[in-house]
Length: 251
Image (cartoon, rainbow, N blue to C red):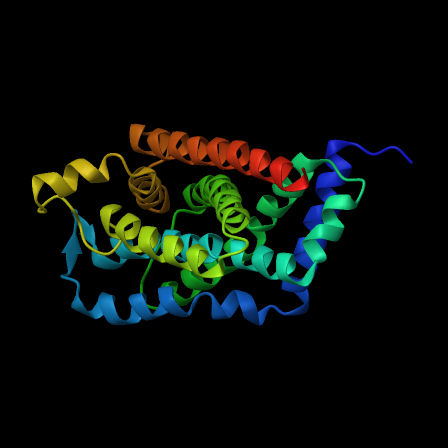
């Protein structure tokens, strides 16, 4: 039976999603850190930040943080499959190499949406307000970003398949500088010049700014356009690099 890229991608997507549906607690567990940040940072914030209430400023950043924490660790699942031989069996299956990385990356959207819904639902009980159309567009931007970040995480797993420690060392080394330089927890406007300059090279900065604008109902703005562009660049880079790594792994 002949297959297409779409059917191969759907096969990989459903295979990757099945463990998440069987064990939804993994989605909740990956939210522990963002929820801790929310619970411990929110009481320390002033009444207003960036001209708006602190909660309106902070919650969209926490939603992006949840996406960052969740998708940047997904390569660990691939490392486990490599160690057990499951990945080798996938490589000899009649599936297109591009589908192996695209299907895996698409799966990252589902837990990301679930986590965002839980965080927004919880914070609305404490006064957070969201613009429905803006929030929907914001989630679509995050979905594109999650595809790219997930693909990069899988690429890192393939590169460190014989040295698991390297995966976690690189992931942890990059995670927190990217998070802080995106202004997720504190505004960077009052920070030193070198920090503001570095933040301009961080794609997360534009995604976070776009999410804040969208959740507050600002849709047709340059800030949103910048966030969309940054998410598309990360997705294109992740799929390109991930596709090449998967083809090399297949020999």
